[in-house]
Image (cartoon, rainbow, N blue to C red; front, side, top):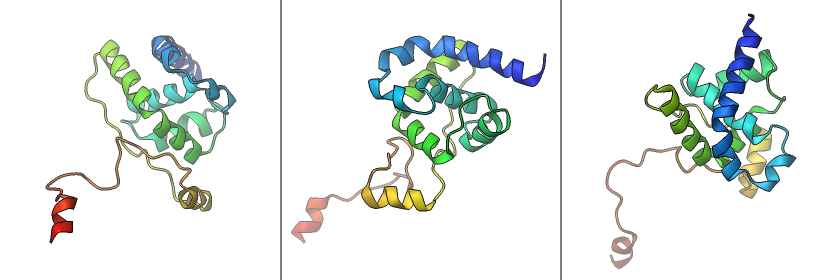
Length: 150
């Protein structure tokens, strides 16, 4: 059994596992995308199973090298993963319960800065992550009302 057959078998197993959860949240507009929501969530799960959550390595290995999924730009993949990250997180918890692995790590899920990304930022069309943030939220946040009364 070669490497691609092994991965295809694993991908089919993951799709069967995640089917009930994804069916519950499947939006009607997801059919218009290049990569289906099932494939997108499967890529996210494979990132956590094989590359400790590093999406870039998963993209290079599974999409560019092995061509197991439809060709999509990396930034578009990250944008969609951020859009459906709560669904991905729920699926990952379910899959790791089934596989009895352990903690879930979310690593390297920020897009690469390009001209197109700058245009998205300029018009605020790029999706933002509710879990991943640029700065850590640790410490004391002063009240805005206290600053106004001074």
